[in-house]
Image 1 (cartoon, rainbow, N blue to C red):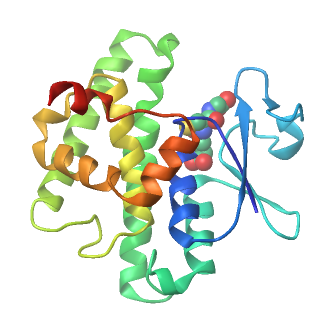
Image 2: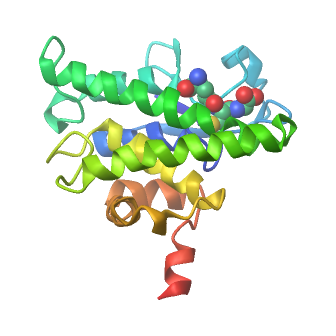
Length: 210
Ligand SMILES: N[C@@H](CCC(=O)N[C@@H](CS)C(=O)NCC(=O)O)C(=O)O
């Protein structure tokens, strides 16, 4: 398998999940401005939608959409319990959470990353993200992971969203449960390995503060 990614982008979530599975995989970075891959390939031929993540499967097919890629990887390695089995109530709860993160958090960051949205949209996006973080803080105050006591693909996804909050000066100290959670997830070997492979040093802020 090969994951097409951009450092620190939402592709970091399936990257973490790939490492959690313990499977062998390759990485190829993509310049999202030029759509060139690190080996000089045309990324538009890989994913005509022009965005990461994209996963090249063993049979050569390309799978896109972060939520789907992560579910695929979890289903490939059921023994890692990265997602509950299909057709169980727990699986629908996970789907519910993945959809929430994708639509209510991931896409809310759009106006913050793309300045052309303008200040009004950015203020509104920050307010919405604050409400969503409050919901998650309430959820996580009594449990270690988003879905309960087990790390799942939803944690990989939420972790990446929290790193974006750091970048966008959404001060996680306002949601201390989320700040603790982010640090705890960051300590996982899979996360450390993924951050290092993408040359990311997101914990610098915390190290500087200590
Ligand atoms: N619906 C896609 C969205 C992926 C997405 O937003 N990718 C961003 C990076 S986080 C990207 O590649 N943006 C470049 C672009 O849209 O041109 C998914 O959930 O996988």
